[in-house]
Length: 170
Image 1: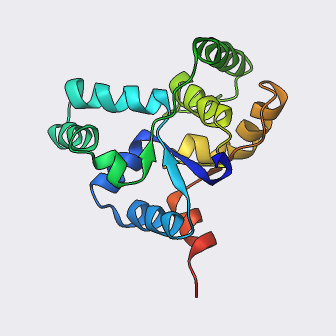
Image 2: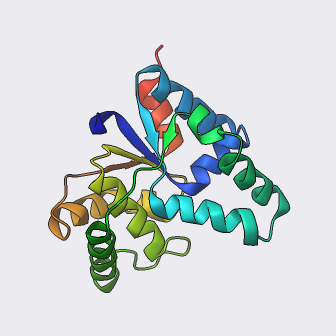
């Protein structure tokens, strides 16, 4: 089942809730071909933070909607849990990747993004959908680092528009 589980980052989930065209269309297309979706523990934590502490009231409302009223379930999003060992190892791998400057020069990505990628790889998600340009620009090196440093299978890091291009039928 995990090979049919697509990890979504926080911004993508918020954009789906906001009915942003690219994110909503990518979600619809993936769902049509039988994918389910995962919000990693880090993504869930970021949603919870946005729900209570975000500067923007609109983002706060989107996070509130996602976390209440069964919205995630209706969107086909699960939140797979990691055990304590997986959490500790994820943090160690993330620190190692940061020490190796995997995100060198990134202005919008951080260690939390790396942890979310590692969590998705732990759950054997084949895809991680993000709008984060820093992650997308470094997708190949991040995927390779997951294999090299973490010993995990490669994770395809893609944008909603790449999903649309790949799955839209003519």
